[in-house]
Structures are given as C-alpha cells and as structure tokens.
Image 1 (cartoon, one colour):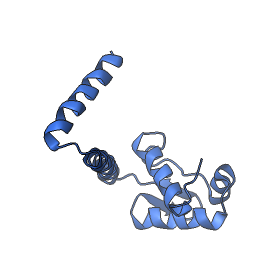
Image 2 (cartoon, helix red, strand yellow; image 1 turned 180 degrees about the horizontal axis):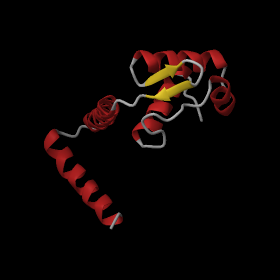
Image 3 (cartoon, one colour; image 1 turned 45 degrees about the horizontal axis):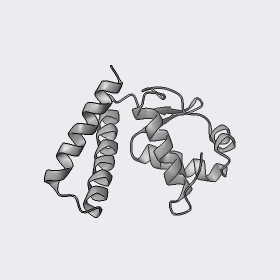
Image 4 (cartoon, one colour; image 1 turned 90 degrees about the horizontal axis):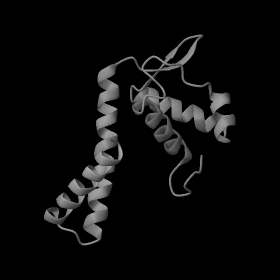
Amino acid sequence: MDFSPNIPIYIQVMEYIKKEIVTGRLAPGDKIPAVRELASELQVNPNTIQRTFQELEREGIAVTRRGTGRFVTSEGEKITELRKEMATELLDNFINGMDNLGFTKEEILPILHSSLEKKRKENE
C-alpha cells in the first residue's frame, strides 16, 4: 500500500479496510487481521493499526470479541450506510473536479451517461 504524505496513515488504513468491507472482500462477521499481522503486511507501526481499529470500533464498523479478536460488524445496515457514504464521497469528488474544470451540471450529466453506457457495453 502506498501512503500519501498529506493524510494521516491511520486514516488511509481505515479507508483501505472500509473498502475491503464494502467490496465484500471482508464480509459481515469476518475476522479482521490482528494488529501485528496487519502492521507487518502494511509496513506500519502497530500503534497506527491500533488507532485505526479504535476508530473503526468507534464508528461501529468493527467489534472486538474478548479473546477472539476483531470482526467486521454483522449489522447489514451499518455496512449499507458505509457503502453509501463512500459512494457519495466519490461522487462529490467527481462533481468538484468537473466544476473545477468549468463544467456545468447540464454538461456533466451527458458525460456521465455516456461513461456509464460505455462501461455497461464493456461488461456485456
């Protein structure tokens, strides 16, 4: 994983884990890798991973089961909410980028429709 120098590492690791969850690579109830294991895999300080896990628990995305480890929440609504939040963030970034390029809403929609149609045809 390549880390951006402008964003705290624990936040980048959180986003990585959240993406693993919303894409289904980590399913509801799945065990999340242990602190040392993930720290070694990502080559970061274990304290950074610990902070990541604390934040994920605070957000209700991860739960700790004493003696067995940390797990992805089994609450489907929480994961659906997370997925929608991540989608909204992506769309906001897209819209802001298009706005910065000088596109109007009226110009963005046809471009978006065209891209979606192209993607649909590629997937057929």
